[in-house]
Image 1: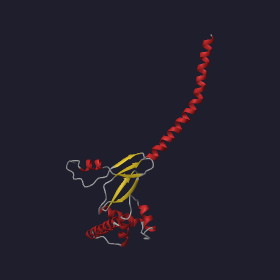
Image 2 (image 1 turned 180 degrees about the horizontal axis):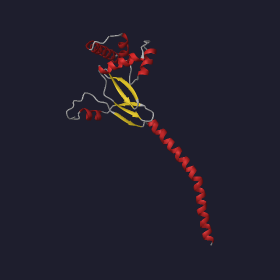
Image 3 (image 1 turned 120 degrees about the vertical axis):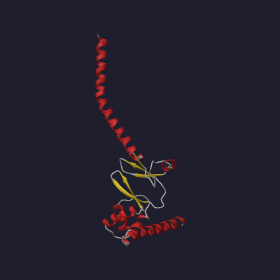
Length: 189
């Protein structure tokens, strides 16, 4: 119940901030924009335009065009209510108001994005003295291979080694036999 109450408070605050943003910049306050904002703040984790489009259509039963989604995301980015991430070649978005600082590990093989928290990293980055620059927020992306892709890669390397050893083993046996035959011939003489 506490989490639900907190979530509702955050949604109301975000709606208020978005209304102030739209008013200040003389943008229309449309039901579509607020439905998109509400859907985004009901999500956990990252999303892209396609997944948001599908969710709006299936879950919210609210049809909006991809153009409306894209244009609203631009407004939400400018209002600092959504943040955009570039994970490799894929753009993903995430709500950012009242969120805990976290970092991202991106698998360069399968594209899987995993969030993690590290208090020491956060402290080091936030306390860094940056010359003539005031830090407001940051993102940290760590690229590498997830455990599943590492396992697949190790299995493939093992398979290739076995194939190579098998291929060498056949020709290697012939070579060994030739050396043994030469030694036998020398010992006979």
